[in-house]
Length: 278
Image (cartoon, rainbow, N blue to C red; front, side):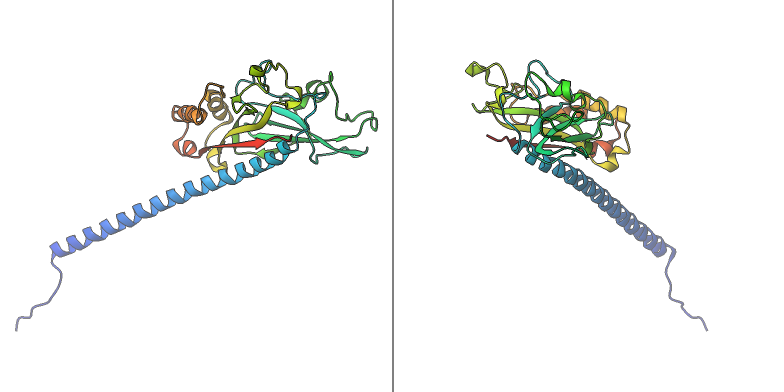
């Protein structure tokens, strides 16, 4: 007697296998996209966290800046245009790294710069009172300057009182908000007939702009590549409108075709204004 065995035909098997393959491919692509989005999110959080710590530290330093007409400031000015990454040094009423001996004053020499490893670092050199040490300098008054007393605060020279504060930041630029409401690369109002910093009397706030790359993206590029990119990013100019600086920076990043795209995707810009003490 002949029996009929139920089963799948070859065509049905081929259709089932094809559907299974499509499902596997769809799930695989979905997982890849999820992984990519998660990685980008982690990169952004890494850059955001590092930059937030840096900018929060600057709030305190600039808020406590010492404003006197008889002391020096190492800042951007017509005599010190600072092409490329900026550098700044000033006295501030914040704690610092004090010498092991000598009576400590409440004043520190604070400085910010991008070092030779393309990372932002901060100096906080605690100063002693006058006449308590023959080797450790106190706050000095004009005509003595910061550059002549502490050369490392105004150059690329090494100093034990520097510490890495913004390892993600590789571009550092600042400008002045003056009392007439304008932004300038000169720390005084030429329209008022002023020609010197004079204790920062005309400066209401300092606007800081930084470009940062998260730590994971940094492993994909060399120091030379980062330095080249930073060098191609425009300096602030008084003729710029709000947003122009970051627009030019983004254009420089987009034009950096030699950089791996994952590294470029990890670059972010940050800007904040810091009011200075009155």
